[in-house]
Length: 441
Image (cartoon, rainbow, N blue to C red; front, side):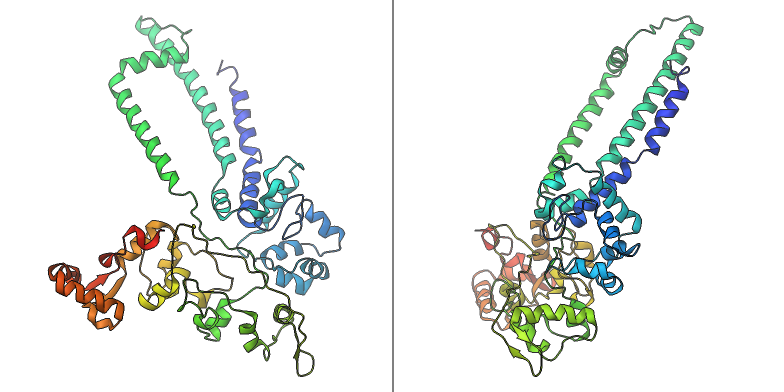
């Protein structure tokens, strides 16, 4: 059968390899990872619907290729094309920039979007409110690739199996032994498995254990996010503010030393500087104009407040479960943890805040190298194990809280204290930082 139809099998393989599900899978994954937070396919959301958006831009008179520039950096597109400027005024929320996307990747997104049917795809059903987990999981989900590879392997296995059976029949005929060519693959496998039952049993046990381990490991990825970066109503370049201008993080996030939350700066904090600074370029002036609108400030003449304010609705980036307690004050003031340990080096970030992958955090000079994924329980526990409260004796901190711990250890369990100091530092875990009630209600 396989010798007669070899051309047919080769044709199937060629068709599978030349088909486009990989491109569609790439567009699907990229849409859900990059676009679905703000866009839907058939319905306007934070951003406009994307179905046939290329045709819409073409009919609107946009220059060829402008839509690709819009996705990569909408500010450049606005400066170069009038239609892009009209799109920018569609929503007060500024679009995120994606300079890492190629034209081919952007095309795959649009191809996938245009292939959808209204009411029949998940994107149209409401991915505008996709969770960070959805975006992260879908980014690495290339299901179609695995389907294509599975089909190819099945075809190859069937072809090789047919040839093997013919060779086995020929060998049996030459040796004068019997071989039933009508035996099914199932019967042949049973016969082989029984003959090699010892190895089959060991292999089956290994497979079962591997499946159980894989299932348990997959549970650790539930609710875990990396690189989550929601769009914000006003683009805020951290590298310009804290990097070039040297503004301390605590100037804007002024409750970080007083409260469990770092807090967002009020528009009045922004106006402390931006009453005098209204931008050097049209793009900068357009961004700062949104601050003026929120504050109710008219820059005309000497400038004055009109009283007509408009609240800025920022989108939350870091979200902890309700049963987890985290205090910025305790970590920043008492623990002496630098902001960059958790948030990365903000002096080099042109984009608004995002959940930094642990690999990126480990590249920051002065950070404690960690291995667990950001914002997971293992990440916190590992940091508590490595982070020192004090180098040497606790009484060197001259802090009331630690002075009391120092006194109790010296009076009640001096040997335990000496054990703590064997590595030259006292860590958070040694002072109860691993107790469940420290972080959980």
